Length: 292
Ligand code: GLU
Image (cartoon, rainbow, N blue to C red):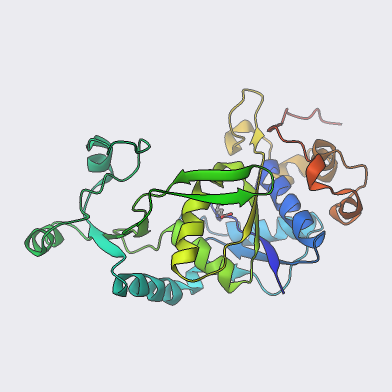
């Protein structure tokens, strides 16, 4: 059964912007007769207890999902196997650069700032042996294209640079761009709905999926929530989580429903009202709600 999904990182409680994205992912999936999967991206940035609270909050909003919640930390073997496979195809190399060295390296012409300049792409065996004594290597993809294009349901054709992205960090942690591709395929996810902050990552993920012989999902990157100052909503903005708002007597479902123009009370009612073509396209500016 094809599926949509929501895949939070358990770094803390979800804020209303995250919750709204989860609701939208659920609406996109359920309104197209898809399964819905929940995955916890817990390879780093883990705060103890956060994953359980996130899952509780999703259920409290009235979202449901199929199968059990998948934790990335249980999938390390799959990630390692995929990296080995790319390596056997000659599509990886070891990289010894520090973040600072990358920032300070002159960027290659026609490349976006911050793209990996390829410093370690063609190291000789001797150089590599020497560098290995200095620090553990990260593994990078030897990308064979400079850019890739995806089709987004809300943004149309989106082209972005594909650089030699990291597949495994120097500390051994598999990188997000790899794990997301493997896990979406594993969970049968053929529809990825998530925040617009990840729009520019979609082309490199689609490229990677294609290299690994995996299907490329449909994408819909939805608007982010901003604070009154125009910055991305964050914990420091005060009462922005389900628990904090509910404690103040604020109806979070109503807040989210209003922001999407839904009259019904809960996600199950919104299914009948949901029309992707009528979604607000601009950011959701969250102003501190007055305590009723
Ligand atoms: N876990 C990622 C995050 O919370 C999102 C992964 C995804 O939706 O592709 O930023």
